Each structure stands twice: as structure tokens, then as C-alpha cells.
Length: 286
Image (tube, helix red, strand yellow):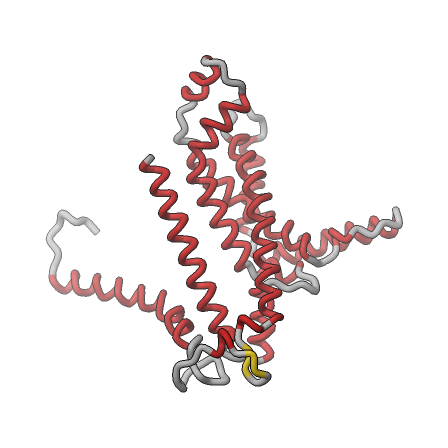
């Protein structure tokens, strides 16, 4: 759309209608889910039966709220733990990779960059199956040839962490690399000339400049790990993450406690996103 050109009323109204329908399509399901979290019904759907908080607080045998639903609480804790470790490992490896790709004399940079991007174009289902088959094959080899049982190679918590890390790390690298390209390297040279060592330069100058990108990518990595389903489905063990647990409940039939979980997740992720946006804008102003 070229703003300098005159626009008819029909075009302006059509454009506004398009924007309105787009946001209705985007947010209406989330709004309905939040409303149904307070529906006094045994089913997670319409019709509306009245307002209640029991799907959050109730501890009756026929109606268990989320704060007393041990199965869902355990899966939420597993998802938080998984997202935490995935975020930490992705931040460390992704930041180091961003520094590596900024080296002009680094050989095979284009090849490694292509390999780094490969997990993003591979469907999550294929990625999960591939990691599972590789881990099982390697575990069988260790067991048959060396009589070693490697728990890391069995479906479980750490295999989920490694599976999610394999593609989430790429997002961290891209975000940090984009910020690093704007960095003025003469600041590092000035600090070195003033007597600072290499570690002090990186810690007090380079990483301080990268702080908004690091915090932003950490938030994105945490959320991506927390809600991941496709890859996690093939790697999870007895300790299920929240998305897997919700899928199993929906498949077998569930109560509106699913809506109450969704409501809490929508509110918490929105607050996290707003907090990250606030601190990022504050860092840029400083």
C-alpha cells in the first residue's frame, strides 16, 4: 500500500475490515478458552452454565481444579525444568556460535551455517523420530558391544532436552548474531588499549551490548521449549511435559480444567512477553 496515493472509501473500509477480521480470527479462540475456564460445566465447551472458580480451586472427587490436579501440576513442573535447561544450554552454545560466525577468517563458515539452519526446515515430527532412532541405535550398540547401559540414550527427560536444544539453539544464534552485527568493534580495541584483558572486554562491553538480545532469545527459547509438542512426543518418557499430558487428556476426554490451564498459560506468557518487551526497550533507551 502506497500511502501517498489517494484511497477510496471502499478501499479504506475494506482494509479496516480485513484488519478487524484478522485479529478476531487470531484472538477469538484464546478469549473463548479463557471464558470457558470459568464455566460451571463438566465439559470444556459451550453452552455457558454459569460462573465458577472451581476449575481452579476445587478438590472434590467429581471436580478437581488445577491447583489440586497433581498430574497436571507434575507435567507443568517437568515442562518448566525442561525449558530451563534447554534455555541455558541454548544460550551458551548459541552465543558462542554467534561469536564464531562473526569471525571473518573462519573456514567452512558457510557449510556450518547451513548445517545450523537445517533443523529449522526439518519437520518436528521427522526430527523427533530421527533423534529417537539414533539414540536407540547408539544405546543398543553400547549395550551389545560394551555391555553399557546409557540412560541418556533412552526416551526421557534428558533426551527431550537434547532434542529441543537441537533446533532451539538455532533461534538463539540468529537473534544474537543479528545484534552482534551492529556492534562497533572499535570499542573492544579501545578497551584493550586501556589495559583490559580479553575476558574483561567480552564481559563488560560485548556481552553488555548483547544483553537485550540474550534476554530476548532466552525468553523465546523458554517459551518454545515449554510449548513444544512434535519433537517431544517421540522423545518423552514416563515424565510427560504439559503439552503431551494435555494431548492425552483431550484424546481420552477431559474436563474444563484444560481451559483453566490454558488461561493460566496465556496470562503468564503474556506477562513474560510484556516484561521482556519492557526491559528490552529500556535497555535500548539506556
